[in-house]
Length: 469
Length: 157
Image (cartoon, rainbow over all chains, first blue to last red; front, side, top):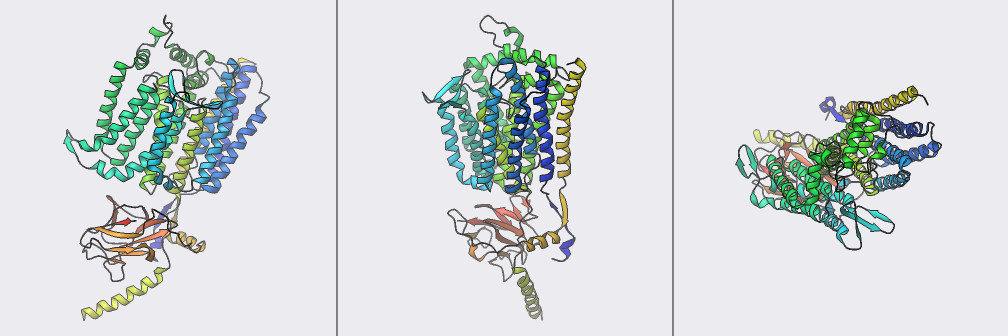
Protein backbone atom coordinates (compact mmCIF):
# COMPACT_ATOMS: atom_id res chain seq x y z
CA UNK A 1 0.00 0.00 0.00
CA UNK A 2 2.86 2.38 0.82
CA UNK A 3 4.45 2.59 -2.62
CA UNK A 4 1.05 3.15 -4.23
CA UNK A 5 0.95 6.53 -2.44
CA UNK A 6 2.96 7.86 -5.40
CA UNK A 7 0.34 6.82 -7.92
CA UNK A 8 -1.78 9.79 -8.93
CA UNK A 9 -5.39 9.11 -9.75
CA UNK A 10 -8.08 11.02 -11.57
CA UNK A 11 -10.85 12.51 -9.44
CA UNK A 12 -13.62 14.78 -10.65
CA UNK A 13 -14.25 17.92 -8.68
CA UNK A 14 -17.74 18.96 -7.63
CA UNK A 15 -17.79 22.22 -9.64
CA UNK A 16 -20.95 23.58 -8.03
CA UNK A 17 -19.41 27.06 -7.91
CA UNK A 18 -18.78 26.96 -11.65
CA UNK A 19 -22.40 25.95 -12.13
CA UNK A 20 -23.60 28.93 -10.08
CA UNK A 21 -21.40 31.29 -12.11
CA UNK A 22 -22.77 29.92 -15.38
CA UNK A 23 -26.31 30.14 -14.04
CA UNK A 24 -25.87 33.87 -13.38
CA UNK A 25 -24.75 34.28 -17.01
CA UNK A 26 -27.67 32.13 -18.17
CA UNK A 27 -30.06 34.42 -16.31
CA UNK A 28 -28.43 37.38 -18.06
CA UNK A 29 -29.17 35.65 -21.38
CA UNK A 30 -32.82 35.03 -20.45
CA UNK A 31 -33.68 38.33 -18.74
CA UNK A 32 -31.50 40.30 -21.18
CA UNK A 33 -33.49 38.89 -24.09
CA UNK A 34 -36.73 39.92 -22.34
CA UNK A 35 -35.42 43.47 -21.82
CA UNK A 36 -34.17 43.69 -25.42
CA UNK A 37 -37.58 42.59 -26.70
CA UNK A 38 -39.24 45.37 -24.68
CA UNK A 39 -36.74 47.94 -25.95
CA UNK A 40 -37.17 46.80 -29.54
CA UNK A 41 -40.96 46.63 -29.61
CA UNK A 42 -42.03 49.42 -27.25
CA UNK A 43 -38.85 51.48 -26.92
CA UNK A 44 -38.61 51.02 -23.16
CA UNK A 45 -37.67 48.37 -20.66
CA UNK A 46 -40.87 46.43 -19.90
CA UNK A 47 -42.45 47.09 -16.51
CA UNK A 48 -42.90 43.41 -15.76
CA UNK A 49 -39.17 42.72 -15.88
CA UNK A 50 -38.73 42.59 -12.11
CA UNK A 51 -41.47 40.03 -11.50
CA UNK A 52 -40.45 38.06 -14.57
CA UNK A 53 -36.73 38.15 -13.74
CA UNK A 54 -37.46 37.35 -10.11
CA UNK A 55 -39.58 34.33 -11.04
CA UNK A 56 -36.91 33.01 -13.41
CA UNK A 57 -34.17 33.57 -10.80
CA UNK A 58 -36.27 31.77 -8.19
CA UNK A 59 -36.72 28.73 -10.41
CA UNK A 60 -33.03 28.59 -11.25
CA UNK A 61 -31.99 28.94 -7.60
CA UNK A 62 -34.34 26.14 -6.52
CA UNK A 63 -32.92 23.86 -9.21
CA UNK A 64 -29.34 24.75 -8.28
CA UNK A 65 -29.82 24.21 -4.54
CA UNK A 66 -31.42 20.83 -5.10
CA UNK A 67 -28.56 19.76 -7.39
CA UNK A 68 -26.06 21.00 -4.80
CA UNK A 69 -27.59 18.79 -2.13
CA UNK A 70 -28.69 15.62 -3.87
CA UNK A 71 -26.35 15.39 -6.85
CA UNK A 72 -23.16 17.21 -5.73
CA UNK A 73 -20.92 15.66 -8.37
CA UNK A 74 -23.31 16.23 -11.29
CA UNK A 75 -22.16 17.90 -14.48
CA UNK A 76 -21.85 21.69 -13.97
CA UNK A 77 -22.74 22.78 -17.51
CA UNK A 78 -26.05 21.07 -18.26
CA UNK A 79 -28.33 23.05 -15.95
CA UNK A 80 -27.06 26.52 -17.01
CA UNK A 81 -27.35 25.66 -20.72
CA UNK A 82 -30.91 24.48 -20.26
CA UNK A 83 -31.79 27.56 -18.19
CA UNK A 84 -30.35 29.85 -20.88
CA UNK A 85 -32.17 28.11 -23.74
CA UNK A 86 -35.44 28.12 -21.82
CA UNK A 87 -35.08 31.82 -20.98
CA UNK A 88 -34.25 32.71 -24.59
CA UNK A 89 -37.23 30.68 -25.81
CA UNK A 90 -39.54 32.45 -23.35
CA UNK A 91 -38.35 35.85 -24.58
CA UNK A 92 -38.94 34.97 -28.22
CA UNK A 93 -42.41 33.56 -27.48
CA UNK A 94 -43.14 36.76 -25.52
CA UNK A 95 -41.99 38.80 -28.50
CA UNK A 96 -44.41 36.91 -30.77
CA UNK A 97 -47.17 37.39 -28.17
CA UNK A 98 -46.66 41.16 -28.38
CA UNK A 99 -47.25 41.09 -32.15
CA UNK A 100 -50.01 38.51 -32.28
CA UNK A 101 -51.84 39.36 -29.06
CA UNK A 102 -51.59 35.84 -27.64
CA UNK A 103 -50.59 34.63 -24.16
CA UNK A 104 -48.30 31.75 -25.03
CA UNK A 105 -45.38 33.11 -22.98
CA UNK A 106 -47.43 33.12 -19.77
CA UNK A 107 -48.49 29.51 -20.37
CA UNK A 108 -44.93 28.54 -21.25
CA UNK A 109 -43.70 30.06 -17.97
CA UNK A 110 -46.29 27.96 -16.11
CA UNK A 111 -45.08 24.85 -17.93
CA UNK A 112 -41.46 25.76 -17.16
CA UNK A 113 -42.36 26.00 -13.46
CA UNK A 114 -43.94 22.56 -13.66
CA UNK A 115 -40.85 21.34 -15.52
CA UNK A 116 -38.47 22.60 -12.83
CA UNK A 117 -40.75 21.07 -10.19
CA UNK A 118 -40.57 17.67 -11.89
CA UNK A 119 -36.80 18.12 -12.35
CA UNK A 120 -36.50 18.57 -8.58
CA UNK A 121 -38.83 15.64 -7.85
CA UNK A 122 -36.89 13.37 -10.21
CA UNK A 123 -33.58 14.23 -8.55
CA UNK A 124 -35.06 13.77 -5.06
CA UNK A 125 -36.88 10.50 -5.71
CA UNK A 126 -34.40 8.83 -8.03
CA UNK A 127 -31.19 8.56 -6.01
CA UNK A 128 -29.67 5.89 -8.23
CA UNK A 129 -30.39 5.54 -11.93
CA UNK A 130 -29.81 1.78 -11.85
CA UNK A 131 -33.15 1.38 -10.08
CA UNK A 132 -34.72 2.10 -13.46
CA UNK A 133 -33.26 -1.11 -14.86
CA UNK A 134 -35.88 -3.06 -12.87
CA UNK A 135 -38.60 -1.31 -14.85
CA UNK A 136 -37.23 -2.25 -18.28
CA UNK A 137 -40.33 -4.04 -19.55
CA UNK A 138 -42.85 -2.08 -17.44
CA UNK A 139 -41.68 1.18 -18.98
CA UNK A 140 -41.71 -0.38 -22.45
CA UNK A 141 -45.33 -1.38 -21.95
CA UNK A 142 -46.19 2.06 -20.55
CA UNK A 143 -44.55 3.71 -23.58
CA UNK A 144 -46.61 1.65 -26.01
CA UNK A 145 -49.82 2.40 -24.10
CA UNK A 146 -48.96 6.12 -24.10
CA UNK A 147 -48.27 6.02 -27.83
CA UNK A 148 -51.62 4.33 -28.47
CA UNK A 149 -53.65 6.67 -26.22
CA UNK A 150 -54.17 9.42 -28.83
CA UNK A 151 -55.84 6.87 -31.11
CA UNK A 152 -58.54 6.11 -28.52
CA UNK A 153 -61.71 7.79 -29.76
CA UNK A 154 -62.93 10.58 -27.48
CA UNK A 155 -59.58 10.93 -25.73
CA UNK A 156 -57.29 11.75 -28.65
CA UNK A 157 -57.54 14.94 -30.64
CA UNK A 158 -56.08 15.88 -33.96
CA UNK A 159 -54.20 19.18 -34.04
CA UNK A 160 -52.54 20.39 -37.24
CA UNK A 161 -52.96 17.07 -38.97
CA UNK A 162 -51.16 14.94 -36.38
CA UNK A 163 -53.11 12.64 -34.10
CA UNK A 164 -50.68 12.79 -31.17
CA UNK A 165 -52.62 14.70 -28.52
CA UNK A 166 -54.86 13.63 -25.68
CA UNK A 167 -57.28 15.82 -23.75
CA UNK A 168 -57.11 15.63 -19.98
CA UNK A 169 -59.64 18.08 -18.63
CA UNK A 170 -58.70 21.54 -19.88
CA UNK A 171 -55.18 20.49 -20.87
CA UNK A 172 -54.07 18.83 -24.03
CA UNK A 173 -51.02 16.67 -23.62
CA UNK A 174 -48.64 14.94 -25.99
CA UNK A 175 -47.97 11.48 -24.52
CA UNK A 176 -45.26 10.77 -27.08
CA UNK A 177 -42.96 13.18 -25.26
CA UNK A 178 -43.08 11.06 -22.10
CA UNK A 179 -42.89 7.88 -24.16
CA UNK A 180 -39.49 8.87 -25.54
CA UNK A 181 -37.99 8.90 -22.03
CA UNK A 182 -39.62 5.57 -21.18
CA UNK A 183 -38.30 4.09 -24.43
CA UNK A 184 -34.74 5.15 -23.56
CA UNK A 185 -35.05 3.23 -20.28
CA UNK A 186 -36.50 0.21 -22.09
CA UNK A 187 -33.87 0.12 -24.80
CA UNK A 188 -31.02 0.57 -22.30
CA UNK A 189 -32.32 -2.20 -20.03
CA UNK A 190 -32.95 -4.58 -22.92
CA UNK A 191 -29.69 -3.96 -24.76
CA UNK A 192 -27.48 -4.19 -21.71
CA UNK A 193 -28.76 -7.73 -21.14
CA UNK A 194 -28.90 -8.91 -24.75
CA UNK A 195 -26.05 -7.11 -26.41
CA UNK A 196 -23.79 -10.16 -26.39
CA UNK A 197 -26.35 -12.12 -28.40
CA UNK A 198 -26.88 -9.20 -30.76
CA UNK A 199 -23.14 -8.67 -31.19
CA UNK A 200 -22.48 -12.30 -32.16
CA UNK A 201 -20.62 -12.51 -35.42
CA UNK A 202 -22.90 -13.07 -38.36
CA UNK A 203 -22.06 -13.30 -42.01
CA UNK A 204 -19.29 -11.08 -43.30
CA UNK A 205 -20.14 -9.29 -46.54
CA UNK A 206 -17.78 -6.72 -48.04
CA UNK A 207 -15.81 -5.95 -44.82
CA UNK A 208 -18.99 -5.51 -42.78
CA UNK A 209 -20.35 -8.03 -40.26
CA UNK A 210 -24.04 -8.37 -40.91
CA UNK A 211 -26.14 -9.62 -37.99
CA UNK A 212 -27.77 -13.04 -37.99
CA UNK A 213 -31.26 -13.35 -39.39
CA UNK A 214 -32.81 -14.50 -36.11
CA UNK A 215 -31.45 -11.47 -34.22
CA UNK A 216 -33.37 -9.11 -36.47
CA UNK A 217 -36.55 -9.44 -34.37
CA UNK A 218 -36.24 -6.36 -32.15
CA UNK A 219 -35.16 -4.02 -34.93
CA UNK A 220 -38.00 -5.21 -37.17
CA UNK A 221 -40.48 -4.70 -34.32
CA UNK A 222 -39.20 -1.16 -33.75
CA UNK A 223 -39.40 -0.50 -37.48
CA UNK A 224 -43.03 -1.61 -37.54
CA UNK A 225 -43.88 0.56 -34.50
CA UNK A 226 -42.28 3.58 -36.21
CA UNK A 227 -44.18 2.91 -39.42
CA UNK A 228 -47.36 2.54 -37.37
CA UNK A 229 -46.84 5.95 -35.78
CA UNK A 230 -46.26 7.39 -39.24
CA UNK A 231 -49.34 5.82 -40.80
CA UNK A 232 -51.91 5.98 -37.99
CA UNK A 233 -50.85 9.18 -36.23
CA UNK A 234 -49.36 10.86 -39.31
CA UNK A 235 -46.48 12.04 -37.15
CA UNK A 236 -43.30 12.01 -39.22
CA UNK A 237 -41.04 13.53 -36.54
CA UNK A 238 -41.75 11.10 -33.69
CA UNK A 239 -41.51 8.14 -36.03
CA UNK A 240 -38.05 9.26 -37.13
CA UNK A 241 -37.02 10.03 -33.54
CA UNK A 242 -37.97 6.60 -32.14
CA UNK A 243 -36.38 4.58 -34.91
CA UNK A 244 -33.20 6.69 -34.94
CA UNK A 245 -32.94 6.42 -31.17
CA UNK A 246 -33.21 2.62 -31.26
CA UNK A 247 -30.65 2.39 -34.05
CA UNK A 248 -28.09 4.59 -32.26
CA UNK A 249 -28.46 2.69 -28.99
CA UNK A 250 -28.20 -0.66 -30.79
CA UNK A 251 -25.02 0.48 -32.51
CA UNK A 252 -23.48 1.80 -29.29
CA UNK A 253 -24.38 -1.39 -27.39
CA UNK A 254 -23.02 -3.83 -29.97
CA UNK A 255 -20.23 -1.84 -31.70
CA UNK A 256 -21.36 -3.45 -34.96
CA UNK A 257 -21.64 -1.26 -38.06
CA UNK A 258 -23.78 -4.00 -39.61
CA UNK A 259 -26.75 -2.80 -37.58
CA UNK A 260 -26.42 0.68 -39.04
CA UNK A 261 -26.51 -0.77 -42.54
CA UNK A 262 -29.55 -2.96 -41.79
CA UNK A 263 -31.28 -0.05 -40.01
CA UNK A 264 -30.41 2.45 -42.73
CA UNK A 265 -31.78 0.04 -45.34
CA UNK A 266 -35.00 -0.42 -43.35
CA UNK A 267 -35.30 3.35 -42.96
CA UNK A 268 -34.84 3.94 -46.67
CA UNK A 269 -37.39 1.23 -47.46
CA UNK A 270 -39.88 2.71 -45.01
CA UNK A 271 -39.31 6.22 -46.35
CA UNK A 272 -39.91 5.07 -49.94
CA UNK A 273 -43.07 3.20 -48.92
CA UNK A 274 -44.32 6.25 -47.04
CA UNK A 275 -43.55 8.53 -49.98
CA UNK A 276 -45.46 6.26 -52.32
CA UNK A 277 -48.54 5.60 -50.19
CA UNK A 278 -48.86 8.52 -47.75
CA UNK A 279 -49.98 11.78 -49.29
CA UNK A 280 -48.81 14.00 -46.42
CA UNK A 281 -45.27 12.61 -46.68
CA UNK A 282 -45.27 13.40 -50.40
CA UNK A 283 -46.37 16.98 -49.66
CA UNK A 284 -43.48 17.38 -47.23
CA UNK A 285 -40.93 16.12 -49.75
CA UNK A 286 -42.31 18.26 -52.56
CA UNK A 287 -42.29 21.45 -50.49
CA UNK A 288 -38.75 20.62 -49.41
CA UNK A 289 -37.49 20.26 -52.97
CA UNK A 290 -39.50 23.07 -54.59
CA UNK A 291 -40.74 25.38 -51.83
CA UNK A 292 -41.36 28.36 -54.09
CA UNK A 293 -43.66 26.37 -56.39
CA UNK A 294 -46.13 25.94 -53.53
CA UNK A 295 -45.80 29.41 -51.94
CA UNK A 296 -49.09 30.80 -53.27
CA UNK A 297 -50.56 27.58 -54.56
CA UNK A 298 -54.25 27.72 -55.50
CA UNK A 299 -55.05 24.80 -53.18
CA UNK A 300 -53.73 26.09 -49.91
CA UNK A 301 -50.14 27.49 -50.01
CA UNK A 302 -48.49 24.33 -48.67
CA UNK A 303 -45.03 25.82 -48.23
CA UNK A 304 -46.08 29.28 -47.03
CA UNK A 305 -44.66 28.64 -43.55
CA UNK A 306 -41.34 27.29 -44.80
CA UNK A 307 -40.82 30.08 -47.34
CA UNK A 308 -41.75 32.83 -44.85
CA UNK A 309 -39.19 31.45 -42.42
CA UNK A 310 -36.59 31.40 -45.19
CA UNK A 311 -37.40 35.03 -46.02
CA UNK A 312 -37.01 35.83 -42.33
CA UNK A 313 -33.64 34.15 -42.00
CA UNK A 314 -32.46 35.79 -45.21
CA UNK A 315 -33.52 39.21 -43.95
CA UNK A 316 -31.85 38.53 -40.59
CA UNK A 317 -28.49 37.90 -42.22
CA UNK A 318 -25.37 37.72 -40.11
CA UNK A 319 -26.37 39.85 -37.10
CA UNK A 320 -30.18 39.69 -37.30
CA UNK A 321 -32.73 42.50 -37.17
CA UNK A 322 -32.44 42.83 -33.42
CA UNK A 323 -34.91 41.42 -30.89
CA UNK A 324 -38.38 42.89 -31.44
CA UNK A 325 -37.41 44.58 -34.70
CA UNK A 326 -38.08 41.85 -37.25
CA UNK A 327 -41.38 40.47 -38.47
CA UNK A 328 -41.36 36.84 -37.29
CA UNK A 329 -45.13 37.04 -36.74
CA UNK A 330 -45.47 36.50 -40.49
CA UNK A 331 -44.40 32.86 -40.04
CA UNK A 332 -47.43 30.77 -39.04
CA UNK A 333 -46.85 28.91 -35.75
CA UNK A 334 -43.47 30.59 -35.26
CA UNK A 335 -43.73 29.96 -31.50
CA UNK A 336 -43.52 26.17 -31.80
CA UNK A 337 -41.99 24.34 -34.76
CA UNK A 338 -40.57 27.42 -36.46
CA UNK A 339 -39.00 29.16 -33.48
CA UNK A 340 -35.62 28.69 -35.15
CA UNK A 341 -36.90 30.80 -38.05
CA UNK A 342 -37.94 33.60 -35.68
CA UNK A 343 -34.58 33.33 -33.90
CA UNK A 344 -32.69 33.45 -37.20
CA UNK A 345 -34.59 36.57 -38.23
CA UNK A 346 -34.01 38.54 -35.04
CA UNK A 347 -30.61 37.28 -33.87
CA UNK A 348 -29.16 36.31 -37.23
CA UNK A 349 -26.68 33.58 -38.04
CA UNK A 350 -24.58 34.59 -35.01
CA UNK A 351 -27.46 33.82 -32.65
CA UNK A 352 -28.48 30.60 -34.41
CA UNK A 353 -24.91 29.27 -34.25
CA UNK A 354 -24.73 30.08 -30.54
CA UNK A 355 -27.95 28.14 -29.91
CA UNK A 356 -26.80 25.17 -31.98
CA UNK A 357 -23.45 25.14 -30.14
CA UNK A 358 -25.40 25.04 -26.86
CA UNK A 359 -27.35 22.00 -28.07
CA UNK A 360 -24.07 20.44 -29.15
CA UNK A 361 -22.71 20.98 -25.64
CA UNK A 362 -25.74 19.21 -24.10
CA UNK A 363 -25.09 16.21 -26.33
CA UNK A 364 -21.35 16.33 -25.60
CA UNK A 365 -21.97 16.32 -21.85
CA UNK A 366 -24.36 13.37 -22.23
CA UNK A 367 -21.76 11.37 -24.17
CA UNK A 368 -19.10 12.38 -21.65
CA UNK A 369 -21.27 11.05 -18.81
CA UNK A 370 -21.71 7.84 -20.82
CA UNK A 371 -17.93 7.48 -21.30
CA UNK A 372 -17.05 7.80 -17.62
CA UNK A 373 -20.10 5.98 -16.26
CA UNK A 374 -19.19 2.74 -14.49
CA UNK A 375 -22.19 0.56 -15.37
CA UNK A 376 -23.43 -0.49 -18.78
CA UNK A 377 -27.05 0.49 -18.15
CA UNK A 378 -26.09 4.07 -17.21
CA UNK A 379 -23.81 4.33 -20.24
CA UNK A 380 -26.56 3.28 -22.62
CA UNK A 381 -29.12 5.50 -20.93
CA UNK A 382 -26.88 8.57 -21.16
CA UNK A 383 -26.22 7.85 -24.84
CA UNK A 384 -29.94 7.43 -25.42
CA UNK A 385 -30.89 10.66 -23.66
CA UNK A 386 -28.16 12.55 -25.53
CA UNK A 387 -29.31 11.18 -28.86
CA UNK A 388 -32.94 12.13 -28.13
CA UNK A 389 -31.79 15.76 -27.89
CA UNK A 390 -29.47 15.45 -30.89
CA UNK A 391 -32.10 13.83 -33.12
CA UNK A 392 -34.79 16.35 -32.17
CA UNK A 393 -32.54 19.32 -32.88
CA UNK A 394 -31.27 17.81 -36.13
CA UNK A 395 -34.73 16.93 -37.40
CA UNK A 396 -36.37 20.24 -36.57
CA UNK A 397 -33.51 22.63 -37.36
CA UNK A 398 -32.68 20.64 -40.47
CA UNK A 399 -36.32 20.93 -41.50
CA UNK A 400 -36.58 24.67 -40.88
CA UNK A 401 -33.33 25.40 -42.70
CA UNK A 402 -34.38 23.09 -45.57
CA UNK A 403 -31.57 20.56 -45.17
CA UNK A 404 -34.05 17.69 -44.87
CA UNK A 405 -37.83 17.51 -45.41
CA UNK A 406 -39.75 19.31 -42.69
CA UNK A 407 -41.13 17.10 -39.91
CA UNK A 408 -43.06 18.30 -36.92
CA UNK A 409 -40.98 18.12 -33.75
CA UNK A 410 -40.44 20.70 -31.03
CA UNK A 411 -37.08 22.37 -30.58
CA UNK A 412 -36.07 21.24 -27.06
CA UNK A 413 -36.49 24.01 -24.43
CA UNK A 414 -37.03 26.78 -27.00
CA UNK A 415 -40.39 25.95 -28.56
CA UNK A 416 -43.76 26.59 -27.04
CA UNK A 417 -45.15 23.23 -25.94
CA UNK A 418 -45.87 22.08 -22.41
CA UNK A 419 -45.43 18.32 -22.68
CA UNK A 420 -42.15 18.66 -24.53
CA UNK A 421 -40.75 21.21 -22.07
CA UNK A 422 -41.66 19.15 -19.01
CA UNK A 423 -40.32 15.93 -20.54
CA UNK A 424 -37.05 17.63 -21.47
CA UNK A 425 -36.56 18.96 -17.92
CA UNK A 426 -36.98 15.40 -16.63
CA UNK A 427 -34.50 14.25 -19.29
CA UNK A 428 -31.92 16.70 -17.95
CA UNK A 429 -32.60 15.52 -14.39
CA UNK A 430 -31.88 11.93 -15.46
CA UNK A 431 -28.67 13.02 -17.20
CA UNK A 432 -27.55 14.91 -14.07
CA UNK A 433 -28.27 11.83 -11.95
CA UNK A 434 -26.17 9.60 -14.23
CA UNK A 435 -23.31 12.11 -14.42
CA UNK A 436 -23.40 12.52 -10.63
CA UNK A 437 -22.85 8.78 -10.28
CA UNK A 438 -20.23 8.70 -12.99
CA UNK A 439 -18.15 11.57 -11.63
CA UNK A 440 -18.31 10.53 -8.00
CA UNK A 441 -14.90 9.19 -6.90
CA UNK A 442 -14.61 5.40 -7.06
CA UNK A 443 -15.72 3.79 -3.81
CA UNK A 444 -13.00 2.82 -1.37
CA UNK A 445 -13.09 -0.92 -0.96
CA UNK A 446 -10.03 -1.01 1.28
CA UNK A 447 -11.62 -2.52 4.38
CA UNK A 448 -10.55 -3.89 7.71
CA UNK A 449 -9.08 -7.12 6.27
CA UNK A 450 -5.89 -5.37 5.14
CA UNK A 451 -4.14 -5.89 8.42
CA UNK A 452 -4.75 -9.61 8.75
CA UNK A 453 -4.17 -10.10 5.03
CA UNK A 454 -0.57 -9.03 5.53
CA UNK A 455 -0.25 -11.39 8.48
CA UNK A 456 -1.50 -14.23 6.31
CA UNK A 457 1.15 -13.45 3.71
CA UNK A 458 3.94 -13.78 6.27
CA UNK A 459 2.70 -17.11 7.57
CA UNK A 460 2.37 -18.41 4.03
CA UNK A 461 5.95 -17.49 3.16
CA UNK A 462 7.20 -19.41 6.13
CA UNK A 463 5.20 -22.42 5.02
CA UNK A 464 6.68 -22.11 1.54
CA UNK A 465 10.19 -22.02 2.91
CA UNK A 466 9.44 -25.08 4.96
CA UNK A 467 8.27 -26.88 1.87
CA UNK A 468 11.42 -25.96 -0.06
CA UNK A 469 13.75 -27.23 2.57
CA UNK B 1 -35.05 55.38 -29.83
CA UNK B 2 -32.27 56.04 -32.28
CA UNK B 3 -31.05 53.55 -34.85
CA UNK B 4 -27.58 53.53 -33.28
CA UNK B 5 -28.83 52.65 -29.79
CA UNK B 6 -30.85 49.77 -31.19
CA UNK B 7 -27.81 48.56 -33.13
CA UNK B 8 -25.70 48.67 -29.97
CA UNK B 9 -28.37 46.78 -28.01
CA UNK B 10 -28.41 44.13 -30.73
CA UNK B 11 -24.63 43.73 -30.61
CA UNK B 12 -24.64 43.74 -26.81
CA UNK B 13 -27.20 40.94 -26.67
CA UNK B 14 -25.28 38.79 -29.15
CA UNK B 15 -22.15 39.44 -27.06
CA UNK B 16 -23.94 38.24 -23.90
CA UNK B 17 -25.06 35.10 -25.73
CA UNK B 18 -21.55 34.32 -26.90
CA UNK B 19 -19.97 35.15 -23.55
CA UNK B 20 -22.27 32.52 -22.07
CA UNK B 21 -21.31 29.96 -24.73
CA UNK B 22 -17.59 30.64 -24.28
CA UNK B 23 -17.77 30.48 -20.48
CA UNK B 24 -19.58 27.14 -20.72
CA UNK B 25 -16.79 25.94 -23.00
CA UNK B 26 -14.10 27.12 -20.61
CA UNK B 27 -15.78 25.34 -17.69
CA UNK B 28 -15.83 22.17 -19.78
CA UNK B 29 -12.16 22.68 -20.65
CA UNK B 30 -11.10 23.04 -17.04
CA UNK B 31 -13.31 20.08 -16.16
CA UNK B 32 -11.59 17.85 -18.67
CA UNK B 33 -8.65 17.13 -16.41
CA UNK B 34 -10.38 17.09 -13.04
CA UNK B 35 -8.26 17.19 -9.93
CA UNK B 36 -5.41 14.81 -9.38
CA UNK B 37 -4.52 13.71 -5.92
CA UNK B 38 -2.31 10.98 -4.53
CA UNK B 39 -4.18 7.74 -3.96
CA UNK B 40 -3.17 7.59 -0.31
CA UNK B 41 -4.67 10.99 0.45
CA UNK B 42 -8.07 9.93 -0.71
CA UNK B 43 -7.88 6.67 1.23
CA UNK B 44 -7.06 8.68 4.35
CA UNK B 45 -9.92 11.05 3.65
CA UNK B 46 -12.26 8.12 3.16
CA UNK B 47 -11.12 6.54 6.46
CA UNK B 48 -11.89 9.76 8.27
CA UNK B 49 -15.52 9.96 7.30
CA UNK B 50 -16.09 6.25 7.33
CA UNK B 51 -19.33 5.36 9.03
CA UNK B 52 -20.16 1.92 10.35
CA UNK B 53 -21.82 0.10 7.46
CA UNK B 54 -25.53 -0.41 7.79
CA UNK B 55 -26.62 -4.02 7.75
CA UNK B 56 -27.97 -4.51 4.26
CA UNK B 57 -31.40 -6.05 4.14
CA UNK B 58 -31.82 -8.62 1.45
CA UNK B 59 -34.00 -7.34 -1.34
CA UNK B 60 -35.79 -9.41 -3.89
CA UNK B 61 -33.64 -9.66 -6.97
CA UNK B 62 -30.40 -8.93 -5.10
CA UNK B 63 -27.49 -11.29 -5.82
CA UNK B 64 -26.85 -13.94 -3.16
CA UNK B 65 -23.78 -15.83 -4.34
CA UNK B 66 -20.82 -15.84 -6.69
CA UNK B 67 -20.64 -18.73 -9.13
CA UNK B 68 -17.78 -19.97 -11.30
CA UNK B 69 -19.42 -20.46 -14.70
CA UNK B 70 -16.41 -21.25 -16.87
CA UNK B 71 -12.97 -22.86 -16.48
CA UNK B 72 -11.63 -25.85 -14.56
CA UNK B 73 -13.42 -24.99 -11.32
CA UNK B 74 -16.84 -24.61 -12.90
CA UNK B 75 -19.67 -24.91 -10.38
CA UNK B 76 -17.73 -23.68 -7.37
CA UNK B 77 -19.58 -20.99 -5.42
CA UNK B 78 -19.30 -18.64 -2.47
CA UNK B 79 -22.03 -16.89 -0.50
CA UNK B 80 -22.01 -13.11 -0.60
CA UNK B 81 -22.73 -13.03 3.14
CA UNK B 82 -19.01 -13.69 3.77
CA UNK B 83 -18.00 -10.62 1.72
CA UNK B 84 -15.42 -9.39 0.84
CA UNK B 85 -14.77 -12.48 -1.27
CA UNK B 86 -11.21 -13.14 -2.25
CA UNK B 87 -10.55 -14.88 -5.56
CA UNK B 88 -7.20 -16.50 -6.24
CA UNK B 89 -4.96 -19.56 -6.06
CA UNK B 90 -3.97 -18.97 -2.46
CA UNK B 91 -5.27 -21.08 0.44
CA UNK B 92 -7.08 -18.11 2.01
CA UNK B 93 -9.22 -17.40 -1.06
CA UNK B 94 -12.97 -17.87 -0.71
CA UNK B 95 -13.07 -19.08 -4.29
CA UNK B 96 -9.93 -21.11 -4.78
CA UNK B 97 -9.05 -21.69 -8.41
CA UNK B 98 -6.65 -24.27 -9.87
CA UNK B 99 -5.82 -22.06 -12.82
CA UNK B 100 -2.19 -21.37 -13.78
CA UNK B 101 -3.09 -17.93 -15.05
CA UNK B 102 -4.60 -16.78 -11.75
CA UNK B 103 -2.49 -15.02 -9.12
CA UNK B 104 -2.42 -16.07 -5.47
CA UNK B 105 -4.51 -13.09 -4.44
CA UNK B 106 -6.07 -12.13 -7.74
CA UNK B 107 -9.25 -10.12 -7.25
CA UNK B 108 -11.83 -9.30 -4.65
CA UNK B 109 -15.60 -8.85 -4.73
CA UNK B 110 -16.91 -6.45 -2.10
CA UNK B 111 -19.97 -4.37 -1.38
CA UNK B 112 -20.26 -0.61 -1.10
CA UNK B 113 -23.75 0.51 -0.18
CA UNK B 114 -26.14 -1.85 -1.88
CA UNK B 115 -23.97 -2.51 -4.91
CA UNK B 116 -21.23 -4.99 -5.61
CA UNK B 117 -17.80 -4.18 -6.96
CA UNK B 118 -14.94 -6.26 -8.27
CA UNK B 119 -11.43 -5.00 -7.64
CA UNK B 120 -8.19 -6.31 -9.07
CA UNK B 121 -5.56 -6.89 -6.37
CA UNK B 122 -2.55 -6.29 -8.61
CA UNK B 123 -2.70 -9.65 -10.35
CA UNK B 124 -0.19 -10.60 -13.06
CA UNK B 125 -2.67 -11.38 -15.81
CA UNK B 126 -5.41 -8.93 -14.89
CA UNK B 127 -9.14 -9.11 -14.32
CA UNK B 128 -11.41 -8.53 -17.29
CA UNK B 129 -15.02 -7.51 -17.78
CA UNK B 130 -15.84 -8.19 -21.39
CA UNK B 131 -12.67 -7.30 -23.27
CA UNK B 132 -11.64 -4.50 -20.93
CA UNK B 133 -9.02 -4.98 -18.22
CA UNK B 134 -10.27 -3.23 -15.11
CA UNK B 135 -8.07 -0.70 -13.36
CA UNK B 136 -10.42 0.48 -10.62
CA UNK B 137 -13.28 -1.01 -8.63
CA UNK B 138 -16.00 -1.75 -11.16
CA UNK B 139 -19.70 -2.32 -10.52
CA UNK B 140 -21.04 -5.81 -10.90
CA UNK B 141 -24.64 -6.54 -11.76
CA UNK B 142 -26.40 -9.88 -12.07
CA UNK B 143 -24.90 -11.80 -14.94
CA UNK B 144 -21.86 -9.58 -15.55
CA UNK B 145 -19.09 -12.00 -16.51
CA UNK B 146 -15.76 -11.42 -14.81
CA UNK B 147 -12.77 -13.22 -16.32
CA UNK B 148 -9.72 -14.08 -14.21
CA UNK B 149 -7.15 -16.20 -16.02
CA UNK B 150 -9.10 -18.86 -17.88
CA UNK B 151 -11.95 -18.77 -15.37
CA UNK B 152 -15.25 -16.90 -15.70
CA UNK B 153 -17.16 -15.81 -12.61
CA UNK B 154 -20.52 -14.08 -12.21
CA UNK B 155 -23.02 -12.93 -9.58
CA UNK B 156 -26.14 -15.04 -9.27
CA UNK B 157 -29.46 -14.71 -7.48
